[in-house]
Length: 262
Image 1 (tube, rainbow, N blue to C red):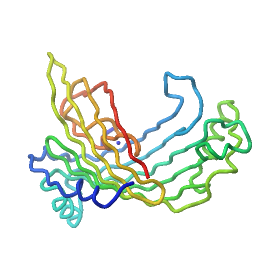
Image 2 (image 1 turned 180 degrees about the vertical axis):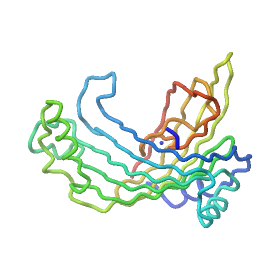
Image 3 (image 1 turned 90 degrees about the vertical axis):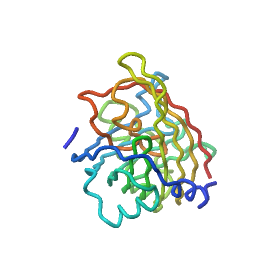
């Protein structure tokens, strides 16, 4: 083992375009991923506001370990490709701008924790990655956002967040996501590579509905190893899968994306 106002028409667009490119080589290794996204990892003034923290623990299968009925589904949706399945457990924490008042501003973002179990089917060609993801979980106190945030603040000696008693109530969380990322080589100056990763994503559920489009530009080596940095959705994500093409792959990147949210 080694070592991211919506209608059905949006899903039809993403699911119904079959990839005709050749599949990349098979990968016999599974992948474990542990990642954290935190508001303090920033050059801006440190503060807990809006999207505060995201945690994810995931496992991605080798390309040879996809159940037959899922492989058939993937071939029907996207055409031939190198397929994987992936499981992850993720938690995200959201707070208002002001976290030191006991009664939050009703016009600000509400306190919320979201805990999700995510199941994904991935299909890769040499130039694209397609994903279909089903997420099930809970939004509200059962997600443990208050316990994680204030527990960590107590551990490091920071002020506790005051308004968690006003978080949204427990609500079942269901989300279906479909997306595709394309890999477009741009240039190869010397030993470096430059590419662009345009992406299109649509998601529907009872917590959030959105359509997202964006592009990531990368500079580095071994760019064909993956389709961008793994992130928690709704961040623009290359998903938790890669293939080792050189002994050490690296890149720096800049991204731009926009969402239409219902």
